[in-house]
Image (cartoon, rainbow, N blue to C red; front, side):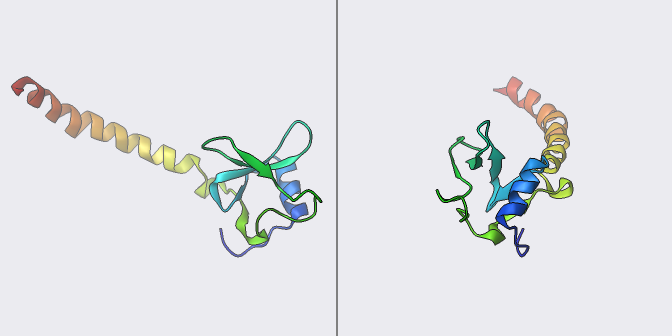
Length: 105
């Protein structure tokens, strides 16, 4: 995430190419709305600000804070890894240990 500078034009081009562009962390995504405005959206609550100030030329954030999500370190991978772990905990230790304890109580 650090280091590479994304210019305003690069950010817009990436969004137009259906790439996921984040700002600061993966909780913020740059999106284009139905009016053609580029917005930075906070995914947890849907609030957003413009990608730029009113002039349309100055980013609302540092160029080094914008990055494109890569599939290998994207949001999907942690989800895929945690599901089998969750199933394992629920089936083996949780399932085997919970029933006898439940009967004793």
